[in-house]
Length: 113
Image (cartoon, rainbow, N blue to C red; front, side, top):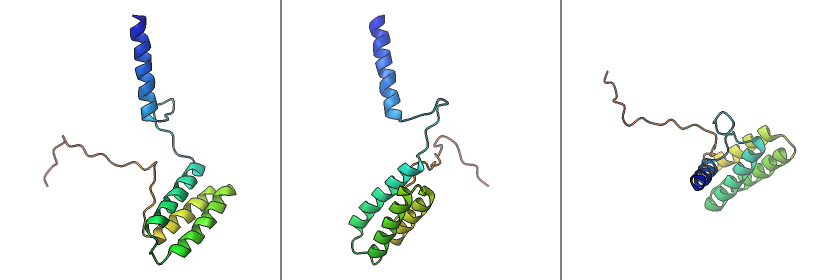
């Protein structure tokens, strides 16, 4: 019986590690602004690599430097906006890890008008 409880605890631990960080109520922990800054800057680095021929590369790099300065100086909201604007210059949509995507219910029948 003890072996079973130990393996069950190991399985539960594995499941909790896969699902990611959660609060006590079972909801997912939101990304902090500082994490959002670094995620956007990383996404911008990747976009600059893949969009080297874009006409706005120099302007996007300048905005990235400015956004990174805002983030480093604890002005994350301004930094996030600036980094998102730099991505827009390259024609890239910023990825928001906290965005909730609506799930479609495949089993629900649609009502006809």
